Picture 1 (cartoon, rainbow, N blue to C red):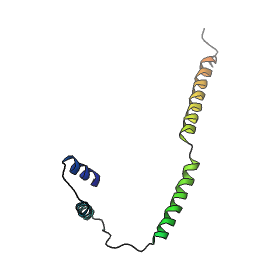
Picture 2: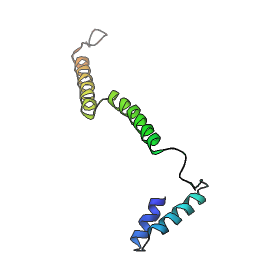
Picture 3: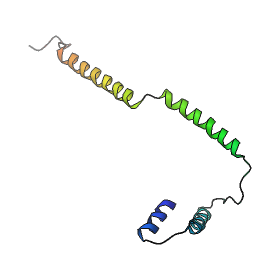
Picture 4: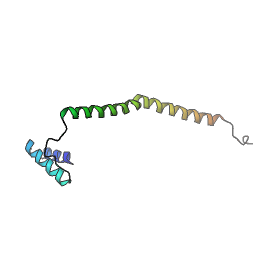
Length: 101
């Protein structure tokens, strides 16, 4: 919603300065009943970088386990070929009741 507000400001060609954006963001957060950070926090830069690195490693490990786009397309193609083979086999089999008279 905040980005939509920013887009409307741009479309209306309303000049906005950084202090305006900060004020509007704080207002938007208050309206959304969110807390506004009024201090620099208690986590050091080093701790933040380490946390980000660990989170990325976890994310990356999950991504590696997932098949790539090419692999997914290949698996879908295999499934389609098997379905076609199954349909062809059904058409080739004689009826179970001994055929028509």
